[in-house]
Length: 388
Image (tube, rainbow, N blue to C red; front, top):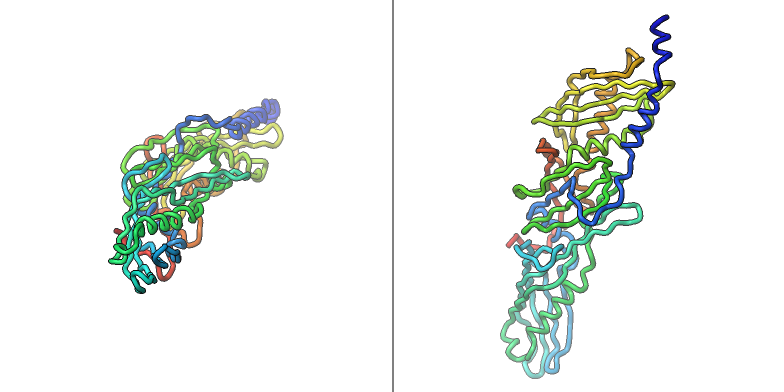
């Protein structure tokens, strides 16, 4: 009887719960002009190469006919090789070395009728751009921007037609640069990873995407370090990751008995993790209980899996119920929140034939690093030859 009176006399924890929810769902405020990323996506040189090639492969064949004073010319060329090259002339560009091959048909009363081999090598800049739509989704595009140099090789017909080399160069420039629209290579949806801003940072022959999440409490990540040799690598701040999961937990539908599970901290060490968890009872006067969840983390069949191994209670409010569905919560719903937060922070590359796989995950200083492969399945008869 005394214990019931004691419990009945406890102050309500609902104001504490509401304050915690307000902090978790707080707007991070206007995006500053200069900011430090709390998530960075790295694409390797080989991956960028595949993505760029796939993006403009439909524009790889060029044919035309034009008249000179002394001849009618019909060039027919195919973009046979492409490869990301070092150096660029603009902040959001990467250099691309190219080769084109084909033939040039000609008809003239002066030089006769026939054909000759036609080839070209050169280097152009590909510009990457980011646009945000009304729903807040970020779309990344790539587009050939301008030639830095272009060398055209012709057969003997060039000696009979003055200015032919320059005309072919101008024709390639118009077709490969001016007529190729921006090609979509990646979409990052707000429902997957809430972002305030994204910046493209070329890094030699690779690309970094610096991201500022909508987390109410942001951390930061190191943008330096070795470049990935293949595929992609994603670093995301642990503080930001747990803040995003916390916001989702408060936005989710309440569980039985008005229970809300709030993740409060997350750390990793090798293949294990430790997570702080507060259970809020939001009915009546309410109560809260704090727990420390230990478990294992692994990548299984392209999905991140968190498995709780033991749970320790670390604190509770006065009058907290002695029994609650802790085991089911710790091993079920709350872990799925974190798993989803991990998986949706991965590169959301979209497009026909694009395959993104998660292959590894590990702890870094203040962040969590995931990596994997990104491949673009080309047509059955690709227009490109082997890499240069």
